[in-house]
Image (tube, rainbow, N blue to C red; front, top):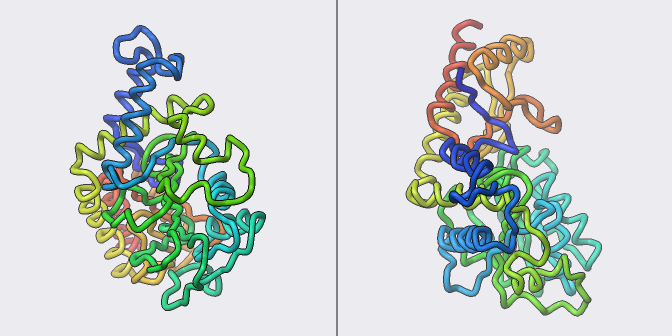
Length: 354
């Protein structure tokens, strides 16, 4: 029976990527060597790294615009630290829309003044703040584009004279934006791009080298740029699978093509949530994420029945985060509309049987 993987991450990837990656584990490019054992200095891997970095910039529309793409380690959690280390000289602004924003704020406070310019904490982060004032003179303004735990997504990014930095870990490459509005973007691979183990960082190079502090080499974006993302041994397999996924995305029509597909999935599940009296959406409707649909049962007595029906249908990974409860359907790029339809059918069946 087919499994329908709604896990928040590590998460679903395209089947074609799994197949090609599994072959490369045995033999990469008919070299007689596994991708797991080749030298990261070999031409085979240098080509992989260069293609991955080039595809990232191409898909984001940032080629030739002064940006560099890096594949690093440590996840988005290390980027909470690295962004501030590299960019925060005096004060930075943060928009607090959930757990990951909160963690980023905590790390940034180690390096300078942090101003929380807006927050949705007052309602357990079930909406995106709007209508706030942004102070002048910020070294940068930080936001989190999509919040997996709470199911919110920024639809309109703030206008600011400060460089806009963004954690896009859970919706990178999922929708078309003017990415040139951002000075720095980072994203853990394990949501929409590849396996856990690497993090994409896209940074406008002229933002760097302006802080007065000395930055340790491993945490200095400029060092990683100068070494082509290979200052230290990179996560070879994670970068390789990310490259394959970016190839797949380009073949799907790029971000424009995948956005249309993602909207269909989101419309399908949110329509069911709104029409089915047994379910309640957690997030403010205007801020609903196309990647992460969060909802609860109106009657918790039905939980055992609903969970059993999901298991029988092959649905995996939809339990909500403990801070929200209920359910969370993560619908990343590689998820088919058919899988969302299976979940919606189960929700409808529960209503008929209740």
